[in-house]
Image (cartoon, rainbow, N blue to C red):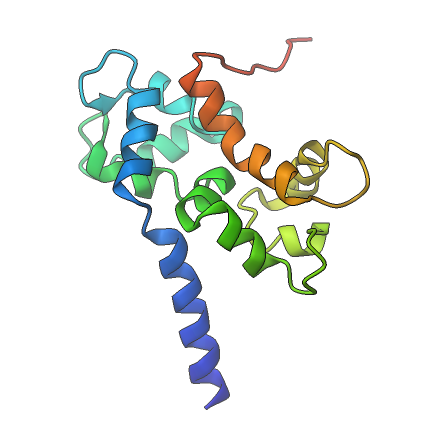
Length: 165
């Protein structure tokens, strides 16, 4: 019985992040589709992928389910599934924050954050980057900025690139 409950809970959590709203998907497509052709080429998609430097081509190829060389609107959610910001926005910032805040202290520690992070070994680096107050926690304001940051940069036409050495 406990195994079935745990499996159901895991499935329910997955469904929350797997069903982004149509307005969110439209917002993402509008922001990234710079040539307004209704699909994303590799360079357009890479602006959405925080791991683009190392994994952008791989994520693009995995997301291009019909192998036509583009990410169409119906492929976009699948293509973005490894993006933490996308998971948070898909669930809803406040509801995601409340779900992650296991001890209900109105802040997330690094362990709580790991439950949404898609960054693997880089989770702590992203957590620290989002912790603008440098207190070791994310409050709702920091979490919101973290979730919205990538998309807002793409909407504003700003890309963040690491300086070359």
